[in-house]
Image (tube, rainbow, N blue to C red; front, side, top):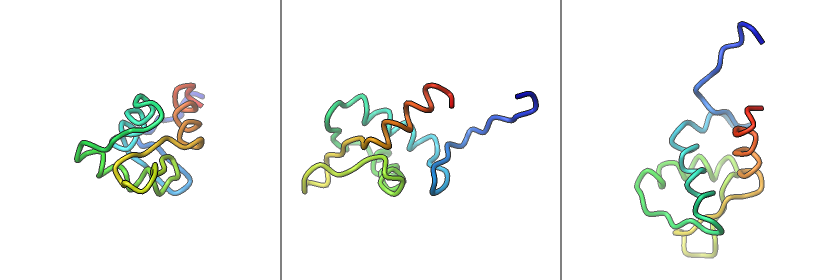
Length: 82
């Protein structure tokens, strides 16, 4: 793989999610079954994560989210550098 440049932008099927959204996904995973939105940065990254299908709302509260199977798979692929 000589000459292959590594990009700092994370891509999904719908386009880049960016480093802020990636950090958000990692916080959601670390939160366990549900993650409560408490930071303004979380709310900024939430739209991209929802659009990519990486997180889903928990219940009707619009405060708690959970990592979806595709979100967990995406983080696992990044960890394995695939």
